[in-house]
Length: 476
Image 1 (cartoon, rainbow, N blue to C red):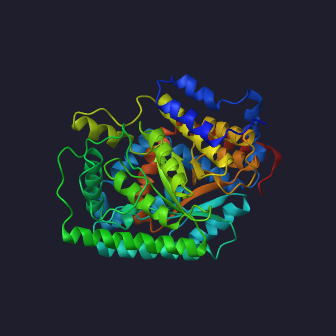
Image 2: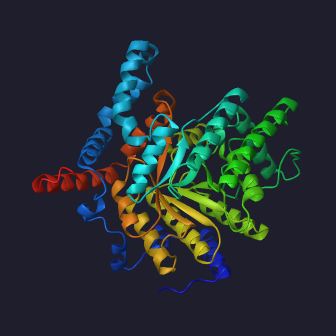
Image 3: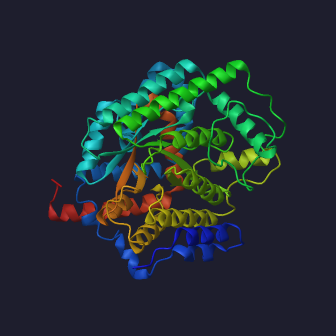
């Protein structure tokens, strides 16, 4: 068993890592376990991995993953769903019914809270937990924001009717409860204040560090005008919505996880998240979680700064660690303005950043600080984090450590981590098919990018299907 590092030592090591030129290999070596330790998460025994999955579910999952891994099929489907064909009611109905019985059923938990609840119960029976996602996204007006808030509140309320501990988080997007145009304005103002600390923002609440020296600031090239009285009122309304949602989560003791957006909006997202965390995260219980996207060059530094600042305030912080989902748009936006991409130059650098952030957070948890959700489909990252957690003495069932994957993806990793004794959640979006369409389009695009992981799932699923056919275990 590896000895725990003292907090100060941990911070010095981490600080040295992101302030020095370190090769990808060196960073990866920081978390690299002994080869034998990788057996903590066993992905070879397909019978054990899929013991809780019915044969019909295995077959459907394998077929759906195969379809969404086919680039021609994905390109055609995305073209159809974005085309004017969707404006014809008859064609639209046919398309939506087709989507509902394929991609929707595979990647989503249902159209209603009741259907989502049934999905939670099923995965709970299989030893997994659910992250409930009322799948509304960008909103442009206060009426829509109010409507979305009611949906989030119902989601929190409904989660208490489900089996204890079956719901790990309720997920929310700030873009659903604050007009997106206002989020852009707030982000511009926050960026300018970082450039010029004398720039006064009278509406600004106490928050944690949002920027680092390497953060992208090119979205705001000129001094933005202050918020108008109407904009300040809209900001106050958005803040009230979030506080109402946070208070409901505190009341029901259900953690609230705020999803990330692209860098043009993320400063405002972090501002809302951190100011709410300072108010509601108390007594060692992080209710409000933020999201850190490890594909960004400034991710490690911002994670360190926010965690350290929260510690000084006595605020327990929770973070979801992801790689990121806006690679194309981020690169195109930076290039159009004549700047380098804010995203790491290679996938290896992104992997290294993710693993380094994971190591930092595990050290924090081992010393009784913070909490983390490792949202990853990368098998190596999952195994490395699991091994590191064991070496640090983080016990099974520690509520500060959660692994997570999207519903319908990386099933082998989810079940492998579950079998190793870790808490594992599946991200469960729900809502009417047409409302969830943007989410489905991103999942199709993302699954194409995660072809190797989906291939592993399909190979293992087919092996298990063949074994069952030979054994005539059709009931399992």
